[in-house]
Length: 149
Image 1 (cartoon, rainbow, N blue to C red):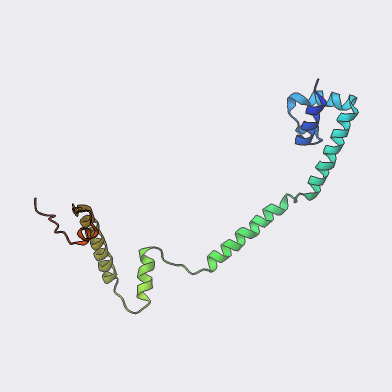
Image 2: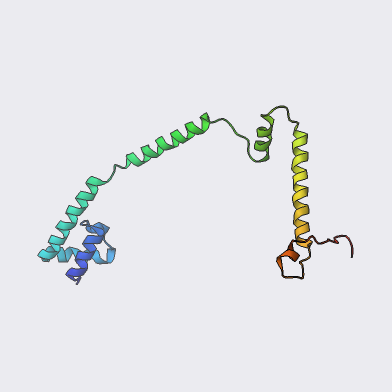
């Protein structure tokens, strides 16, 4: 037989409708509700809470309608927005707005920038570290013998 403490906890968790309760407890809960005044009071309290929750909840069609309105608004904003280039094409479009700029020069400038960046990274990786520990020795230029072995 189910105890009244467990019955109250289940009523608070699952509500007054015994069909929502776990299957293993339904029959015992029905028998206890028929014989116990405390169990019937717990179910009455759960019915009150269920009714309040049902009154406060939104209608099932409202979230779908709100989502449809949101999607329609986003689609309209995307359709109204002008198409913008992405990445390097966006940079090229920005440069071309200042006058006639040949795309070949943009490619050459980009390639040159990559070569300079690669050179700086190789130079930093192959630069020997100075032996001295004072600050002046660290600031002195050091010859780099990259191609000499």
